[in-house]
Amino acid sequence: QSALTQPASVSGPPGQSITISCTGTNSDVGTYNLVSWYQQHPDKAPKLMIYEATKRPSGVSNRFSGSKSGNTASLTISGLQAEDEADYYCCSYAGDTTYVFGTGTKVTVL
Amino acid sequence: QLQLQESGPGLVKPSETLSLTCTVSGGFVWSSSYYWGWIRQPPGKGLEWIGSIYYSGSTYHNPSLKSRLTMSVETSKNQFSLKLSSVTAADTAVYYCARHPHPGTFDIWGQGTMVTVSS
Image (cartoon, rainbow over all chains, first blue to last red; front, side, top):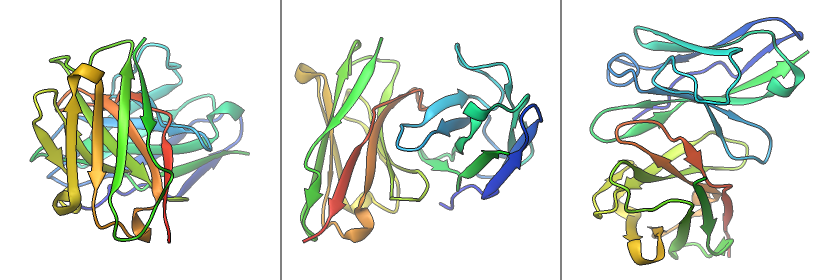
């Protein structure tokens, strides 16, 4: 069970859009729509931002959106704001009653 | 509003057993709709799913930890617990408990508790 692959870092100026990729395999991301995304500020617990690949929980800004194509899921942050600076993790159900997280991406607002 | 709170020793000696408890408030651990999971994060590193348990006692484990892992649920106390045996420095991490439908999403998390393995 290998971690899903994410870029180590992504950055952009305020107001820009950025996209974080999350690449898995046919055994996880490619088979299940059960991909979720979490935002984690320093020394804080992860916060759910996207579930089932494209759905946004109540209370999460509509600047956050998710998509999936094949073995790769993506999180897009539109209109980047200073408060979006954080670590982001994807997670997928991997079958056989297991879950796998991504390697994590540090988002920097320039 | 459902809340989760982890508790347990912050320091464990190598080769001993790490024991943590997660207390559920504002909801019930015996909810038929949810599983209760454990996730950890070593300092400066990413998240790792440890395992999950249903109120009936049914459990799912990360294969890499299965041989050392024991999980249980105590409905009378609205709690669920984790025991990880034969710990090493590699088990040093912040340990989180979280709720999730199965299969599904970890939608509510505890604040996390830091556990250090050191003599």
